[in-house]
Structure formats: C-alpha cells, structure tokens
Image 1 (tube, rainbow, N blue to C red):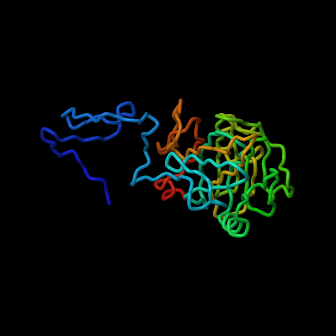
Image 2 (image 1 turned 180 degrees about the horizontal axis):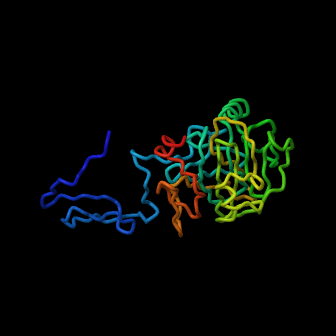
Image 3 (image 1 turned 180 degrees about the vertical axis):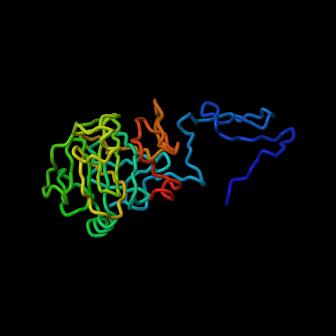
Length: 284
C-alpha cells in the first residue's frame, strides 16, 4: 500500500494538514489555513523518520533473557537494575554492511552482535542471565557473540577462548557514543568511541575492507542480532540507548548513510547502511 497523495486535497475553512516536517513546530498546519495545533510535551527529538514505508530496527521487548527490563522511547532505550540482562534487535542480519550507534546512559555495558541461535539457547536454558556476561563480568563461554565492553575490552569466546576479554580500545562512560560497523558479508566488525575508531582503525580501512585493526574478522556466517548487555553498577541501573537511524536522543551533527537514511552523530563509512526495511531489501 502506497501513501496517499494529498497534493489535490482541499481543506475548507476548519480543515488542517499536519506533515510534522518542522521539528521545531510539530503542530504546524501546512494546509494554508494556519489551524496550528499547540504542542504539549514534545520536542524536536520526538520527530522521527521511522514510517510504515521505511521502518528502522528497534530493540525487541519480547526477546530478552529475563523479564524486568524497561523499554522506552519507542523501544530504543533499555534500562534494568540488578544482575546482567541482555536485549536484542527486532531485525536480524545475515549479509550486507551496516552501521549503528549506542549512547551509554548508566551501569556496566557491553554492545555488539550475537547469533540468533546463541540468544535463543541462552534465553531458554539460562533465564535470568545474559548472553554475554555473568554477574562477575566474565564471558559465559561458548557463545557466538562479538562485543565491546565499557572497560575497553572486547569479548568473544568463539575467537578469544577465554572468559576475561582481551585488550581492545578505550574505556567509556556515561554519554559516550559507541559506533559499530559490521560487514556481515565478509565477517568483520569495528567499534568506535565518540567518532574515533578503536585499536587504530580508520574509516578508510573500514571502507576498503582492511581488517588489520578490526575488533574481529573472519566471523563465520550466521544470523546475527544487534545486542546490548549489562548490569547495575554502584547502584546505577544498566541503561543504554541505541540509534539505528532514528535516534531517541538529540544529535548535534546529523549524518546519513549513502542512501540518505538515518540521523547519526558520526560519519557513516561509505558502503555501510542504516538498519531499516528499505536498506535490508536492497542490501540484506
């Protein structure tokens, strides 16, 4: 079903047409009648390009390792106190090149990708734990996940064969933004912190497919979710926001992918795309 073409409509004296294109005046009537609506408890960040004709991924409240996580802002912010808990994206990735960002809001956190079979098995057999860590912060072992931790380490039992992670990049804290470039076709993943690609990687290397400074390469083909995992720290609940292209927080710069989709804080590597239905249909 295609959206209706409203170019020929007339609105009479009391009619109105709200197109929500002006983020600073979301109640503006563009019919010509100036029957503007008063905006209440809405700001520019409440405008979204997520529409029925191009739907962006969110986190999935129906798929978490234990109940109790709170999802807000259109399922783009995830919060939970207590021990470790994982949540995953609504869309899965099998091929293509993809970019997204997270914003750390509180607690201890790991972010990255995990296979659909990993998550399903862990959720059913170990409810109440996480797909990435146990309460002590160690990798649970044997899981097909590839993550970057707030403590600066990368974790993958599949690749590293240990429970404590390996030295990878900078530590990060509240309000830092973590970017991810995942080449599912060639099995390579990179992470950035506030626009700086970690472990001396560069955006040129990512665009060219140079894997020398990637977090992980030669990742076997699988069906992967975007995952975020964490636990309470010093009384502060685990909380993180994810931006697949329709951010739940204010963006100061504004970057899109090569198709013009998304709104990101940092530059999207050329050839990488935001995780939405139009891009998946073309590249996924």
